[in-house]
Image 1 (spheres, rainbow, N blue to C red):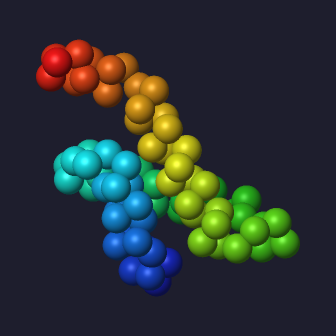
Image 2: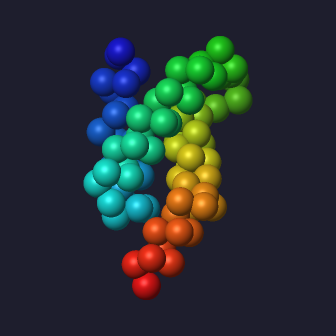
Length: 79
C-alpha cells in the first residue's frame, strides 16, 4: 500500500501525458501497479532505483498499449 500511495499519482500523470485519455490512463496505471506487485520479487536495488524500475514497467505498458489491436482499432474508428 505504501508503494502505491507514494507513486500512484506520479505514474498516472506520466501515463496521462502520453495517452491524453483519463480512462485509458487510469486503466494503464492500475495494470502497471499490478505488474509491479507481481514482479516485486525480481527488483534488484543493485541494478537501479525502485523509481527507475517502476518507470520502466510503466513505459513498457504504454508501449504495449500503443501496439495493441484495441488502440489501432480505436484510432481507425476516430479518423
